[in-house]
Length: 278
Image (cartoon, rainbow, N blue to C red; front, side):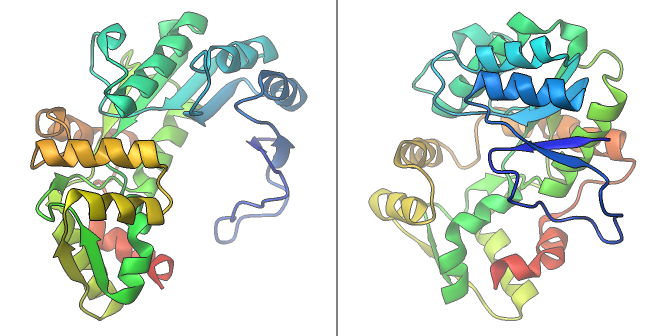
């Protein structure tokens, strides 16, 4: 039986429509506690694992990955970031916060598992990041820096389906890195206007300076160091990281390759998840 590990197994994940009861077991594990990870894997008998970054670990998740292997895991799918360079992970500097922490975790993963045993999923900018501005959406007035800033807005559905496929089937064509992107490069202002159309009411987008934008991120639950890093990235360019345009076509094609369908556009995603904005 498949298993889902959580810090608190009493926090029930929503089931899919018509999903039979008791289709999987929940076990307690904490990615910052290697012993709990090892115990959960051994109890479950799992041989494959999907996981994401645990911030703040001094060994960059090395002990977590070792615990997975010691427990019996033979194949890992790790949710990383497209900001990690295709080559030269060792050269990423700590000042590049998001690429750095993901690159270090990938390096740890590769110290424990062989190349054919792992896949790093490298998605673009999450569509769900708009929920950091949920209060503004509710007020129909979103305050952001550089509304013209462009991103791909990859959806959780696409990331989840691709990751699940790879988890079950393993690598295809020897690919240990898979980039994933939403189908269009769309500005921040456009996505909030899309949400307005879904809600049937106009959502105003206000261009604000760095200090106010920083506070909006923090108010939305983004940790201050991450918020400061993001503001710095936005200030530098009209699009998210230089690799976005260069890699976009590859990431969109990968969604089709692993799901058998086109990548989900932002407005369709917003319409499917209207309840998140109300």
